[in-house]
Image 1: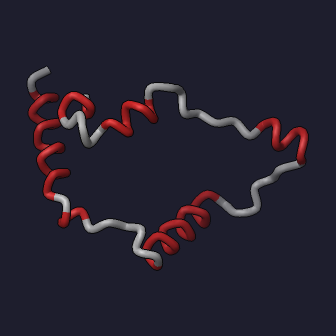
Image 2: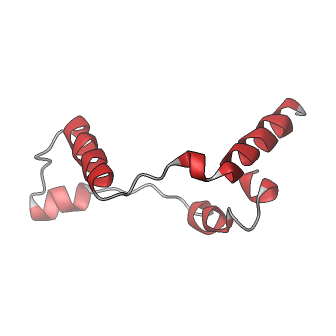
Image 3: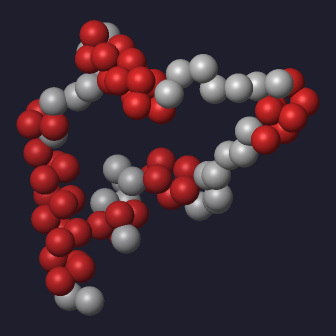
Length: 80
């Protein structure tokens, strides 16, 4: 749907999500002894802190195009 609403901007979505994106680390656990050392919530907190500190979080207000996509998406869903 997104690719039909904004084909040029969503091209990466088509490429990235056309295949299964599930990853399994069971072999790493089995063969390498991999174990999680950081809980999920802490990992997310650290990731967001890093993105914030390095300017990796964009100001969506600088991209009005996104609002247009969301509006078109809502209109398309309403028509279903």
